[in-house]
Image (cartoon, rainbow, N blue to C red; front, side, top):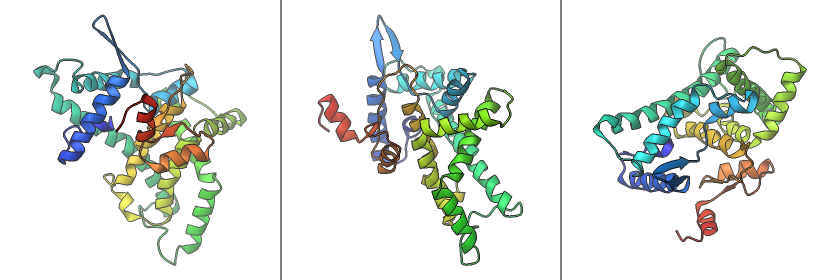
Length: 269
């Protein structure tokens, strides 16, 4: 989706790279048989959460299947017609990405309100006055306590999406612990955002700040790790933080750089 979002990027180099990347990704995940296209794709976080916890996909899969169709058209595997309104469709993908980032940003904003008398101040921990609060916050982050809360919020989100009720009993917390083990790299990446909050990085208050792209990275990590069919899925990325998050959690080799991926295919960059 991020590649589609930059398909009409104002920067010529980025636009060209994203178009090449999208075409490569689509063609690697598409099989053509008898004029039919069979596509393998990595579903986003909301689809995975519902399937992981309840075996449900709800309406999200239908929505994202439209994105798959759009990607096929942009890659030249399906003809584009005037009725497709391609530019509007590309813009809609960008809006969806912003919505997903905003959902997480609001969670963090609500947390800041809860510790700051209902006020939003992204630089709350900045300065000498808040030195002790900052120390406790970062200590809690390092010990994994905040990731435990984040994991709970993600599971809460899944229950909300499928309209299921639940109690936070012993069984629920066992689910949280298992979730943290299964998706550890996603929580490690999330800690990067929390670290920015703890260190008073005020730029993070802006949803357009590049740090919020971490939310999209987290969704990709979920898609890499959740694979009920047992296929060997590897995430290809140039982001060293993502690779480090996998290695830190014991998932060595599940995230590799493009040069390593091309070498596996016997291709040269």
